[in-house]
Amino acid sequence: MAGVTWVPHGRAVRGRHPVSVAQVDGGAIGLMWMDPSRLSFRFIPGFKYPEGSPIRNVDTSPSTWVPRLVAAFNGGFELKDDAGGYFYAGQWVRQPRKGLATFVVLKNGHMRVGVWGADLNGIAGVEAIRQNLRPLVLKGKAQASSDDDPGRWGLANGGLSHANRSALGQLSDGSLVFAYGSEVRASDMADALARVGVRTAVMLDMNKSWPMAFYYSAPSGGHDRVGHRILSSVWRDSTEYQQQFTKDFVVALAPTR
Image (cartoon, rainbow, N blue to C red):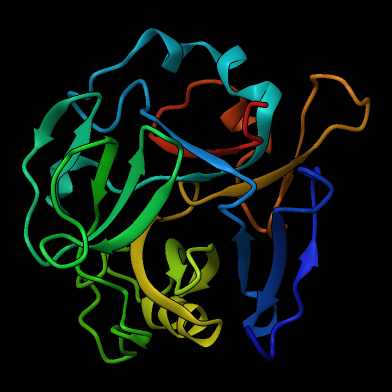
């Protein structure tokens, strides 16, 4: 990840920080790197979106994730936007489509980003599957261009080329990078992720208030968690993911002993 200054942030896990944050493009894009060897990932559906999602009792119980919070970030589009399939808690709510960028959260807490029908297939051991358009980055190459039609990566604010955007990518070593961009093009997001070595990336949510990511500290040393925006331009408050939210999100947790 040459050329980018990564700064460790948030709580340590087993003596090291599993989350580091960087800024690129003059501060327009914030990146959050996550070490999967020190984190366990969990998908939490929103109480409204994805539409028709199963919701388990633990999804409405913040005490099952807040004490272990290390980081959190938003999920994908509403299903009505027809950006791909969705699976959760043993149920296909929307069938998957071959060739679409996909993130998968496994029951063992691992997380993967790939392409459905290529490097991702099947539901064995899977808790959640979320597709969102075609790959933003594929085999290390940005797939978005500044010449793209405004609707190719989601219709932004009535068709504008620039918007608040989010994306998630995976490096060859398995680590994950979430990207948040303030008033950027999809191509800016793709270029930033490719620049830091992401092999495959999926576009996530967009527009003013939906994209967000936070890392957490525990200043009291107890169970309280204080959230911090990865970029100051993140619109919503850093407490949003300490309870079930309108839309789906992913939490990165300190593993249980």
